[in-house]
Image (cartoon, rainbow over all chains, first blue to last red):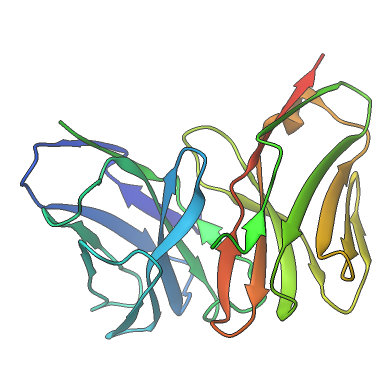
Length: 114
Length: 112
C-alpha cells in the first residue's frame, strides 16, 4: 500500500534531550512537509522540502532541524532548543510543492516532554 | 496573524440533518481553498477543494461554497452521518508565500 509512515507513534523525552521523528513515503512524491498540531492552534508548518537535498523553514522552524538525503525520507529532529516541544507532529507529502494544496498525511507522532 | 479562521471550535448536529462548517480568511490572494477531515490520533485527509474562480464545488454529500466578497467559505454535509464526527480543518493556498495555511479546526459531533 502506498502511503506515509511515521514512527514512533508515541515518544517521551526528558528535557534537554534531542529526539528524531521518522517519516518515510512510498508515493514517489517530490515534496515533503512537517506540521505541528497544538490544541486550538490548527496545523503550523515547521519545515518543507521541494526536492532531495533541499529544504526550507516554515513558520515555526526554531528549535527544529531536518534533512532530505533520500526522496522517500524526511526526518525531523526536535532539539533541546525547542521551548515547547510537547505536541502532535504530522508529516505529509505531495506530488509537487504545495501544488493545489492536496497533501497526504501520515498518522502522526505524539511527543511528550517530561 | 491568523489568516484562516474557524470561529466555531465545535458543532453538534443530529444524524440526517445538515452540518455547516464555516471558515473566514483575510488574504484576497489565496488561489485554492480546501477542507481536511481528521480523526483522533490520525493524520488529516483531504476532503474537498475549490478554486478561487468558482463559488461552489460538490462531491456527493459534501459541498463547499466560496464567497469571495465576504472572504468566507463553508462546508455543507448533507445528510450528516455519525461517521462524519471528526475535526474539520479549512486551509488556503496562495498569496505571497504560496504555502498551505490551516485554520484552527472545528470539532463536528453527529448525534445518532
